[in-house]
Image 1 (cartoon, helix red, strand yellow):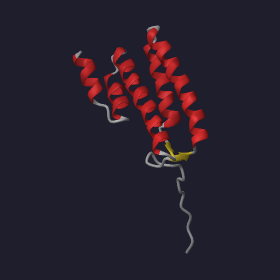
Image 2 (cartoon, rainbow, N blue to C red; image 1 turned 135 degrees about the vertical axis):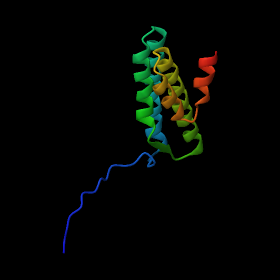
Image 3 (cartoon, rainbow, N blue to C red; image 1 turned 90 degrees about the vertical axis):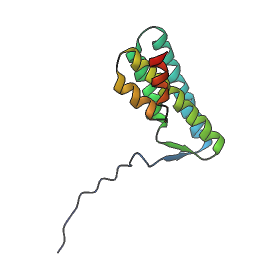
Image 4 (cartoon, rainbow, N blue to C red; image 1 turned 45 degrees about the vertical axis):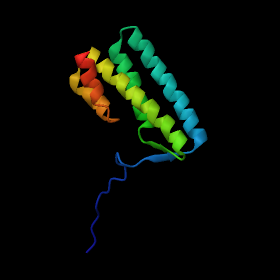
Length: 118
């Protein structure tokens, strides 16, 4: 007996795409531009747009893994900063759940506590 089964071949959150140094350099450059756009929006008081821009960094880089430890460190540093910035932007718009999720993406839940107490 033959029967067909639909299979979802989309990668899961645990699957990371490996990028070489040249590709990562371009992605990091774009990520820095997105983060800078987020900083500009934040400084202008447009916290929702800032959160969107910071989230774009996570969307771009969150599913990547670098070939070298040095490159991976740069990737993780930009992700950490962008996620924490997004969390702060969400706090400014009173979106506590989104703020916590943004921090938890990089294991930084403590930032929410510090900002709320500060």
